Length: 112
Ligand SMILES: [Zn+2]
Ligand SMILES: [Zn+2]
Image (cartoon, rainbow, N blue to C red):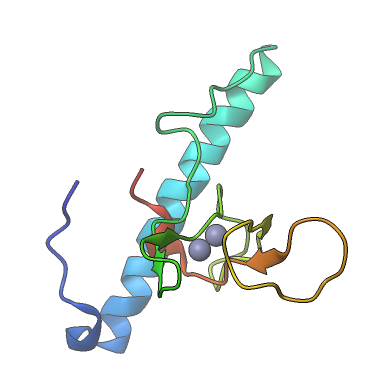
């Protein structure tokens, strides 16, 4: 899916705001759709368009290191999801996989 939006540097503050609000509408709609299925006793499939995974590619190393966030959590600002990141730098949190925080904006969670 490609969206013909002004690139990040070309957006006005108002446009940037509108993009984040539009992205939140899409994410909320997906969450509502999943909740509707859950209320009917069905488990939404975790592939396809149900989740709103983060689409950001992180700077290397390693090359093509995708943000591991599977679903946007937050209220319109930077995503609050924490995830186990087996490939990223060790953040020194101790046992288990190092965890990373997504911190990306809603507009980066729209594409599936
Ligand atoms: Zn995220
Ligand atoms: Zn992310």
